[in-house]
Image 1 (cartoon, helix red, strand yellow):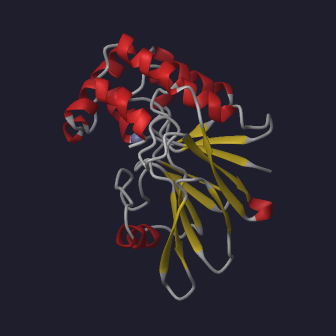
Image 2: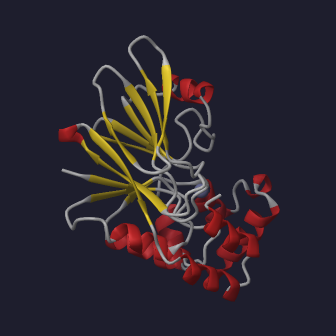
Length: 241
Ligand code: ZN
């Protein structure tokens, strides 16, 4: 049994395809939201996830794309991109996104886009991680949202430690500890590694793995230009930030 956990795809089909090339046919595919927004292929990404029977929770860009929720919190570049996305998403994508929930419990783990405390809260430090652990009883919580691959560990003494996963890496889960794992972003990494990021979880082995997968960034950048999406969205893919 192996779960493949994707997040923050953001309409980047080339990055999604590169990650999917790492999957086995029998992987159970899960997604932590932000399928759309920023990138040039929102419908194609949503379709590819549906073809893989992906179970997915909502991200803030997904909600903004289908009903304009929260757009006032977007910066001007994100707002321009979400207006473009609202104009191009088709009925199938809209219906599928509209059918998704904000959280999902699968076995011993919880999936949310940002945090179990507030779904679109960022977990960027130990204090936010502590609040998130307090808001859920799940021993393992998978998140995205910040586009930074990393892990927070809460041990039996209540102490939180942090592990960076920006170059990928493995975590063997200790039954005495709880974990918040950010699998990073498939389509717009912001942890200074431009390679697409996603995770695997194998419950029998108690093993979480984060992989970094290079993909053809220039191809996506050409599409971003052709769609007249903001230039900064193309540049940041090269920088990984
Ligand atoms: Zn995102």
